Image (tube, rainbow, N blue to C red; front, side, top):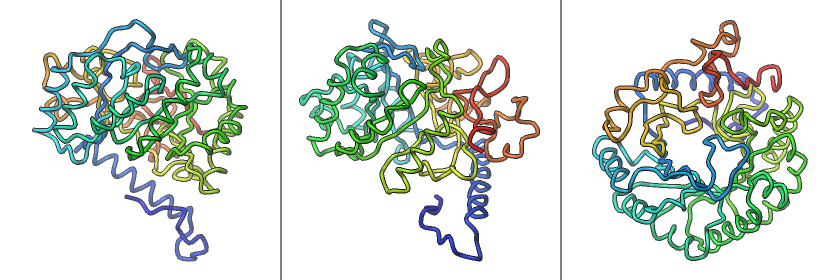
Length: 371
């Protein structure tokens, strides 16, 4: 939608880069207002299971071994049938997650059906269960994209994910995916916290040796189980260091990127990721939780007022079209810190997943840290 800022002629006297960015951010704000009135479903998440073979200290969904699985494949298939009949699936990415989605008993059945119905789908995984046979199964069922988590060097990764041998198993899984030469995009995602930030450069050397398509480097978010470890959250200096690292690598042409969270200010917007900030919760993004609840982003806490229905009693397409009111207005309307902020037009109160709904304020605001 927007011109690649890295290709703009920075010596053009007619349009300075800062003014060009302002125009792009204004256009993004106008797009947000349109989407409040006419939402477009781009990402539909299926949380197949709460069970996981690891127990990550930062897990937003508090997943761990032995927890329950999501709806039966037939229930998810009904959602797919409904979506195909009532929404435009040519513009939609089906996103499969968990827990560890490969633990879901009906995985092969469900994803084979999704392929038959013409859905484009991708997955997030810890990678530890991706054997050569599993990689072939993922190819056969039509998986296009995948993001595998690597959260530090070997000892750090295993400690933070509570799974001894998890790093080696995940790296084998990544290589098994690469060896298939069949997937559109293989990404590694790394969650940076206060204790593993010193490993960024060493991790880069490892990622640079892998034939992956991108490395997504994101900061730990104050949500889920991470709220129990405040000493692991990033300090302001950590945040600045993280973004300097990403910016340096991208300016060198290396496919390192930041995630979708947070308005980052004029200097960093569109320079550390390929788009301008927009929280898509409820306007671009919807999810089915493992208990059948219909919500926006899975990282948002499951408060009653944020749950919009349940697939066992509601038709998803009708919920998408007629509910989600809580997400289709700016968060800044209720955020007490946003009232007089000069950036509110572009930030709109920030991301829903990091919002403190009890106190009506953001848990993370980059103003005063990055800009």
